[in-house]
Length: 329
Image 1 (cartoon, rainbow, N blue to C red):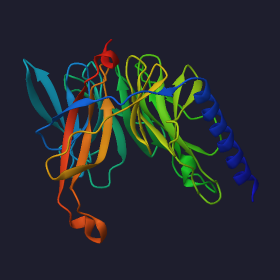
Image 2: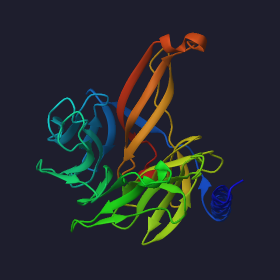
Image 3: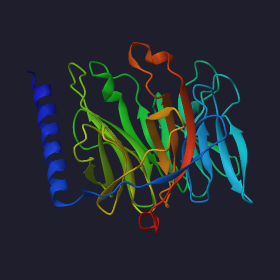
């Protein structure tokens, strides 16, 4: 075993012990949160929502996204693309309480354009996220005109391709800051932020073989990184953080909300008659613990060798918690 591999395994084991000890001392499971699901009658996959009920959807694999704004109890739909071409690859990721939207697109709307992030404010003004010197910049989180995500440097001679990938945040004054988990041989992505903290994910890689660990999640507060892990899960991936420091997580054990040190499991939506929910994907949430996401249904009993031919239903949704003691603020 080469030295680089030894270092990776030692770091990862140490981090796993840290995670395990932290949950012996604090976080615990609670009951499942029941949600009332409302289907969105609009093409695309719901990505996020804010406290005003505004929702963003991305139309992948087609370019562009939709911003649903709530006004006078009605939802107004605005289609958005950076360049309004079939090659601009616009994807919307998050919306904050001020109506700022973050996502990604091609810098010039051409088939071979360089990918950058963007922030679109509530007036429709677009500013690009483009880390100086980066080949690729991706925006995944927004809060009060600040944004975070991931960027790729140009290729580094004699180094793993993973060494190109870093997390970043951009402040309101336009300054970019690299934000990586303080461990060697890691890839970091920042997926959420509020006025105080940031959340993100990382994996460890072998610099020789490029073998990788499972995803790990963290919360960062003024330079201090704290591990997040759903107890018993083989992987944990943090999706978002709201203004109350509640954290939205995906894991091998399902979707959870971590609130005040307690893990609340998110309950599945009701299935259509004759169908079974097979894939709930929660993408974002707001300060009231309302959710936005998608789920897939497959005809009950259909599967086996010909599962690809099974009738399926795709739903995009927003959901409201049915437990007032959990949602109360």
